[in-house]
Each structure stands twice: as C-alpha cells, then as structure tokens.
Image (cartoon, rainbow, N blue to C red; front, side, top):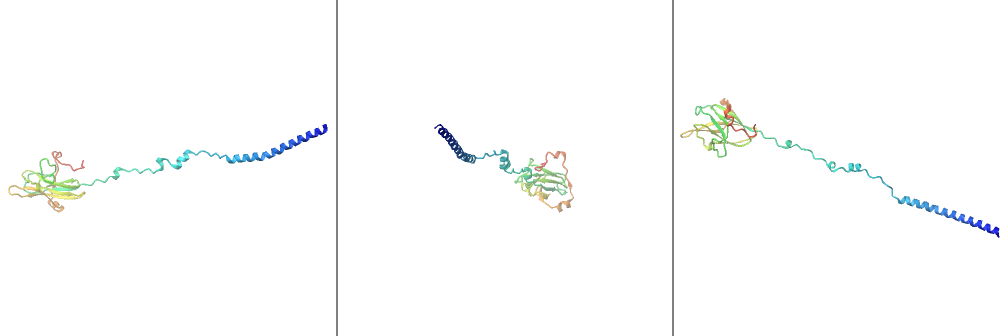
Length: 214
C-alpha cells in the first residue's frame, strides 16, 4: 500500500509537470502574436519639420513677391521745351533817328503803358535778340514823339526752337506818326547790316527776363 501510494504521488507530480509545460508552450505563440500586433499598431514617430526649410520653400511675404523696380522721377519728367528766338530790328532812318524806342510785351488788347514789361530797346540802326517761351505773345512799341495805338500790337505764336524776325517800321499819321512791329525775314534783316544793341547797366533792372531764365 505504501509503495503504490508513493508511485501514485510520483505519477501525479509528473503529470502536473507535463501539464504545466504544455500550457507554457501554448501561451508562448499568443504572447508573440500580441507583441507583433502591438508593434504594428504603434505609429512610427516622425522627425519634426525644420522651420527654416519650410520658410525657405514657401518664401516670406517680402521675398515671395517680386519687388517693384525703382523709378527715377527725373527720367519720367518730360524735357523742357526750348524757347523760340526773336530778332527785333530797326533799320536806320531819319525819322526819329535821335530817339530810342522800346519793345514791350502787352496783353491781347495791345495797350502799352509805363508798367508794360520791357524786353529790349531799339536805337536807330540796331537790333537785339530775345528768347521767348513757347506760346502766344503780344508786343508793342513805346518811345518819345510817337503815338502808338493798341491795334499796332504784333501778335505772334512762338514755336520751340524756331527763329523769328520782327521789324520796327514807321506808321504815318495825319498829325503825328508812330511805329509798329511787323513780321520780316532773314534776308531783310541781313540786308540792313545793323549793329547789335548792348544794354546798359541802368537797363538791367527794367528789362523783362524770359520765363525760366537765370
């Protein structure tokens, strides 16, 4: 009875050990499968994006758009028109030879007064040049011993860079005469062989300067 009991105990221990080993073998594949599933389910960690690379690719607001080209205001401005050139001349005559007459710029009505701006003087047998701004101008004559009418004024439209010749002529009247300005030509001017008028120092303050002159 004791022998059987010992054998039975041994058999029971062996059986229990065998059963535990079998259960351990069955649990191992399950654990491995669970580990595989856990590794598949966990998402891969990505490195954070480089802010500098993102900024360079997208471009900043200042550099993404092309900067407008700088413009030079002076280059866009239209060049100033050159003035016209007017040559006023007075042929040598006995009438009023001792007097000097003055060319003045007047309004459309032709009225010349002491306040009319003087642009030059014409002694007998002389001439002067005047740089007139482009546009319409009205001129008349003032001087002693002469009666000048408003209708004696000369109206001229000056073109940029052009040259004009204007002659002072005599206008005869019933009681007294006067002078007027009339258009002339280069040939008539050269035929007279006149001397150029030279302003005196006292004339400088009275003469009108062309617009834009220094």
